[in-house]
Image 1 (cartoon, rainbow, N blue to C red):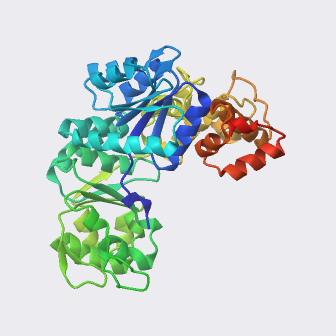
Image 2 (image 1 turned 120 degrees about the vertical axis):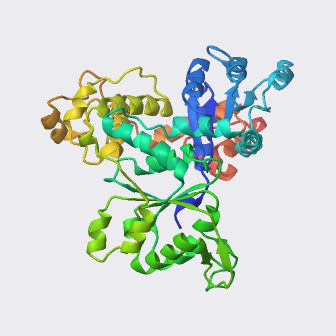
Image 3 (image 1 turned 45 degrees about the horizontal axis):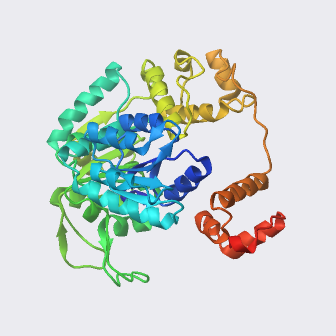
Length: 459
């Protein structure tokens, strides 16, 4: 089943200056599906809050350039709905009550089990959702799904989005892979009257041919072997909202006829069921294929094509809007350096030079390049684009950067990480094992292998 049916978990801010603890919390929360923006100083956290809409902020009490109150005051002054959870090693600190009175949602005392902070986040997010007004919907989504580019082609698309969003008819978005078709679909959702309802994005290419009906329509308990309980389909989940069908050109012909009926009548029957279910869903389809050519080749139904293409948006490749490339690259540089926790004010290469490269993978390829570039700032010997890039642009994008760092065996990193966590937990092995997500016996075995002896009174 495609993971796009799972509701996206909200973005979090983690402000913690202790590197190992920050990595530990971040890794744990990301393993649970959260998007985590990390900061080590108050100034970095404020920058993230300025650029991003954050549901929940985990904030350390004592930081190199201030206290957690700095972040709390920023949230209050800017009337943000962000819920702040204070992390403190000073549980008896009288100021905790002051923080809560001023608006902090909750606090947690270090060291804490990771499951505990997860529960606090879930509670804070529920409170955030209660405050999630129409204004907050726009504030939450627009920075995340901002369309970057001021070329005539992109200005036309932005105008079309605003007009189409109010009409609520079916939309077909065409364009090469990596041009940002889902981004356009997201913006139609943001600008439209359904922006407070579900947006479900489904990649048709990832669904096995024999599962289309059960995935889109759902099934009743006992409909087939293994159907132990009733399951809603994409249409039912997206009711009153928007269903984005990505790569619709990969949809099998047999299911296309069933989809057409739903689009025309607004009803369907679950697999194994007898009752018609009425739905009100706006359809946005996208494809990197030429659907008119597919229709001519009898690979796509003509009646379904015309039903989907009430409105059509073509998203041009980067090579057709080269002037947008430097602006887009700069935006991606800033976004990814924040995400990766790097303090790099400007790219160390010419943004204009990027216009010379063909970018066959479009925005997706450009994003991958920028991400590699940020990593390679510490690895001078490796060039992300290789000979092809240098030949076409005439530049070495990695010139004048730091030399390659020393690489140590992975086990050395693991040993340092575990021992630093053990030190952080004041040599309490049970607490260390809990924070690392290890069994106590596993931790003890590794310590024996490394020749590390911890006195019994530290158990």
